[in-house]
Image (cartoon, rainbow, N blue to C red; front, side):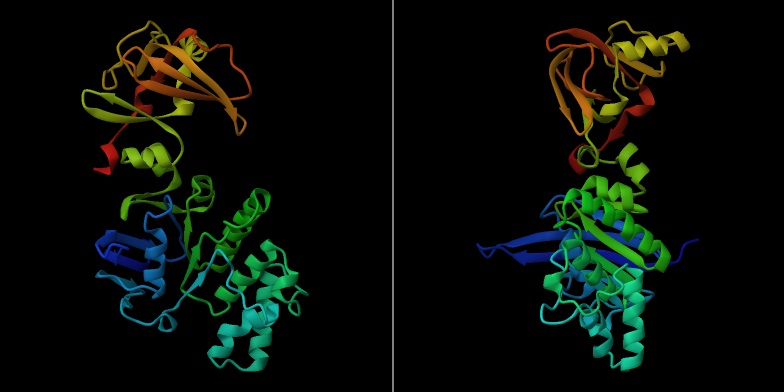
Length: 355
């Protein structure tokens, strides 16, 4: 059984807005995080994820709830008394200090002697692949190099938990993807618990052991990337983590991933191998016993992005559904009628709007 290193119970936070009315930005957050785990808090801007991270760091205090680190209640402790460190998107490096001095800053505050400081700095520079950069100042570094220095400074004190607030957000796409892999390798090598914040769903899926999806101050679902993607619990999670079709049947909402929508050619190919598939147009029945659903549709739009072709289709009951395919074209034109279908177990029942 994995050991719990951080426990958040009932975390609630309120702020006064410009009109002096109270706004609740976090509502009863409960979350257990295991030792050595990489957990990502995923959500749109303003959902409360950064506020939650700042509460863990001690930069904000909750109006209700407790923060427990390794069995100790640290809810009211000052930041410097918590064995956690934080990495910011803007790096927060001291511009007048060298790379080595930036990394050594926390050790100096703890009055670690010079010899040990120098040794630890060299270890960190090697770890983040910046050997020979110790005498440089931040203005002589690239964005990726600055981020490595910020990470080295954050881990030099061996924190129990490292908090990362959108640390790759300022980097270009190519460098961001490279740094994602470097961060994941570094986390596994060190065994430190990472709590990572992003609004980028692909980043969360690629890097995380578990993902917590936040919406308007509420933690809607926590699970592995596979669980969150293929088995969303709410319509918000289904729509935010990967594009999902939301279909309504008898007052219930179902999430269906675009890649799981089969077009007529796919169904005909499937029919060759599975005699139970019936491609005749029929009413959408998401909870029948046939194991497969099919209905007629008309193509409304075709678009290409990110290596995928997307087709927007209108079903007989006027609901719309999107199918995606790798490649740049598919033998269907706007206005054409076709058959679409999906396996019944690919349509997952979800709570509507997180309720």
